Length: 385
Image (cartoon, rainbow, N blue to C red; front, side, top):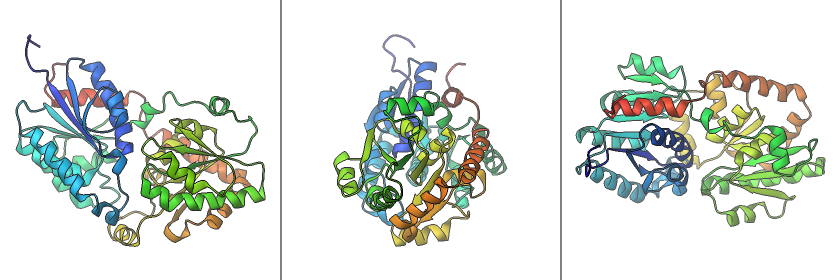
C-alpha cells in the first residue's frame, strides 16, 4: 500500500451471538492473512476482540421466531439503512461478508451488488431445511457461498451459485475447549460427580420461555437424586440478574460466565436451547435434550415453512433424530425431568448419542476453517495471493 493511501477494507455483518462467534473466527484469520486491511461492520464483542471495528451491534437484541422479531423492525431498518449508506459511499469496501442472519443479510446483499461490492456468504441460509425458494435470490446477489456442510455444495452448485466448502467454524472455535477432566478441574467438580448443565439460550426471550421449565426440572431431579449438581452457562448477551431471578426457588444452580465450553465438556447431560450451542455440545460429545419454545404464531409459521422433521442442529446435520427434542407446550419441568432421569439411567442411550456425535465430527471438515474462509474472502476482494 502506498503512503497515504486508504487501507483496503472488508465489511462483515453478523446479527446474533452465534454469528458473532463465527465471525470472530473469520476476523482472526483475515487479520493474520491481510494485516494491512481494515475489518469493520456489524457484530458483537467477539468480533471486536478479533480485530473488527464494530460500528453496529445487534447481538444483544436478537429474536427467536416471527412475532418476536416484529418489535425489532425499526431497529433493524435503522441498521440496514446505515450499512447501505456505507456501501454506497466511497471508498467502498472491497467485499461484504454476510454471516447467517438471512432475512436481514439477503436484503443487504442486494444493496451491495447494486453498489458494485462483491458479496461472500459465510454460514449461508439453510435452504436444505426451509425456504428453499431463497436460492434464486442467493444466485442473483451472492458472489460466493462458503459452505459449512459438505451436502450444501451440490445444492448451491446445481443452482449456479459459486460455492466452496470450508468447513464449520465451530471446529476452530472448539480447538481450545477443555477436556472433560480439565473442565471439571476448572469448575471445581469431583471427577465422579453427576452433573447436569443448563444452556437456556443467548436471548432474553429464550431465557423467559425455557429457564423456568429447566429450573422446575432441576427441582424434580434433585428430589430423585440429591447428589446431582447443576451448572448454567450464562451467555455474554444475557443479564445475570434476569437469570438469577428465574432460577430462584430451585436447587443450587451454579452460574458460569464466559466458559460455556467448560460447562458443556464437564456435564453428563445438558438441557440445551435449540441453536448453535447444541452443535458445540455435540462436537464436544456431551449428550443432551434439545428445547424449543416460541410464540404460538411463530411456531405455526415454522410448521408451514420448514421441510424437515427436526429442530435441533445436530439432528438436522445427521439427518435423523439422534437427540431428544421437546417443543412448545412439551417443554415443562416434569417432562424435562422424566426425559433426563430416563437418559441418566440408561447408559446405552447416552452412548448412542455420543456415537452419533462422533459421526458428526467427521462431517465438519478439518481445523483451519477460518484460514480457508479468509483466503476465499480475500480472493473475492481482489487481494494478491
